[in-house]
Image (tube, rainbow, N blue to C red; front, side):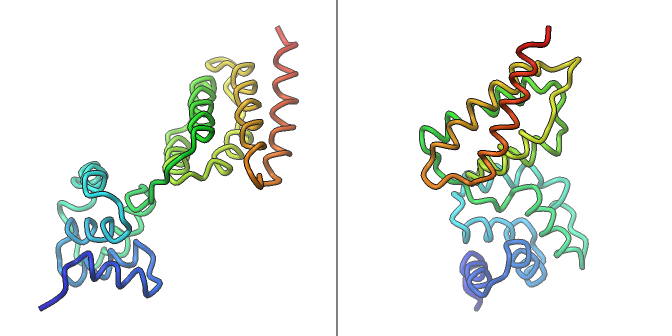
Length: 189
């Protein structure tokens, strides 16, 4: 008799397999993609309720009608969609930074769906530096966005990130860039 699927998933992860690889092994072994994906989520300590929501969101597209031999591809897609992302607990300052990011996203005017998805994953995993650098490198749409608000909001977010213990040095450079853009848009009618 086999151990429960979450135990097998935990063992696969402990052996160094990625969540996508662990999913593929379990799905191949059992022929049941949904329980395999759920087991990987549970092995990663993603709460069952959260795992259920994530898996329901992609069930029809990826798990309802599995193709034999496509387990590795499905695992990669599940990972790319953020199904296996480990949520982190944000500090009050980090919550404030995320709120500023959301304001900047609204002020952008037309952020691509893929970019929004990547940002949402970084918010979930607490990788706020990557989110900031990504937004700082993206210019708002002059016709549909509010460039002055975009850059000013990113300045405030960067200032908060720069005060964190041991801030990433790239934050300082990106913050300088955002300040330059904010100043340029504050003087432009």
